[in-house]
Image (cartoon, rainbow, N blue to C red; front, top):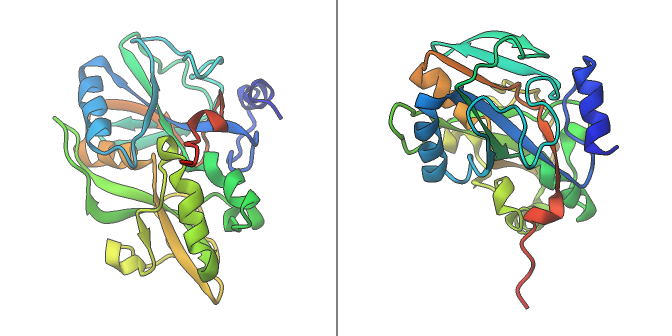
Length: 257
């Protein structure tokens, strides 16, 4: 399915995790904040490029992007509404909440490299079991910027031990969508004490002989919003991404000869 067809379904009210959708097309995290917070958000992203790789930024009030030829207010499957850092609602349409001072930022998403993992023979468990990817707040603090601060959020994919190096090599070629893993192995080393209790998304089984592998996650700005408590912000619901009109290959770094 091409992105316009998917966005049409979401606009009509389909609410579904986008992992596995529109293979070959780049997916993105969405954060929209008032203009007076946008500079802090962009500096936060610059200082924390692994979880916050910026793909595009709109002008204030604009609900369309050069990478997203749709309506950012309606064409994602689900959105979250934050007031004073509290999650107050999850909706499928934010037109009534969109303000003329909102700046929308699109950040890279690890769903983009999942097709490359599968092609390389690396299993993607949440696709196998039909769930959203598990996401966890870690004990690692991001570099703060202005009024924004908070923890690094990661996604987790169980990988057979013999394929961990392949998973790292494949994803390292996609630095604009989080790139190589930030941690491999013991979850407790980064402050995760129960893989069956993700902070966002769904738990997935880790089989014998598999290693939990963690990638930086674009939900990190949402954790910063919750920690920093700005008056108002909108975002995608974790795992319910913006499917852009950019190809995955646009962000693929070629092997050096």
